[in-house]
Length: 127
Image 1: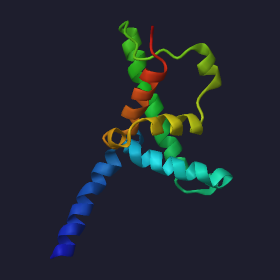
Image 2 (image 1 turned 45 degrees about the vertical axis):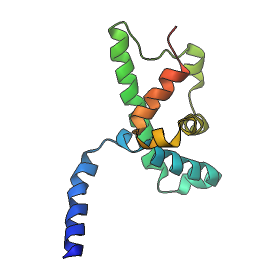
Image 3 (image 1 turned 90 degrees about the vertical axis):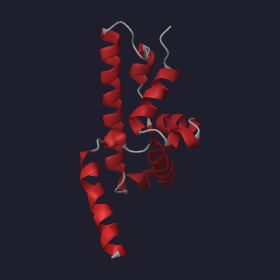
Image 4 (image 1 turned 90 degrees about the horizontal axis):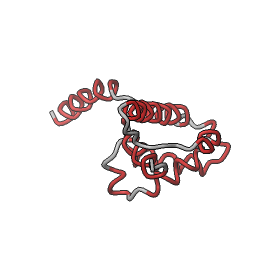
């Protein structure tokens, strides 16, 4: 009986997980896995988590950029990245360091998209 209830509960979560966008993963879970992958160095390229995590970060970036573009169109951008930073881009270390700067308790309550938005607003304020 107990196994049946647990199995039913687990199966109920599958459709919700399938519908979740990659950027909607938990920011703390992403951070912990990212720290582990960075520790692997070049071995991270062979880790099965790398591609899904890159997709999640790309999705979070696209979602936050769309939010900022819409806000900019309305005359109130959320963040303003200088051209020099746009040319430089961001690497894995930047992402991990900035996620690590968010207190763990707060990071646990955020999705990756929400955390990335918070990071960009803090890093590149519009003056």
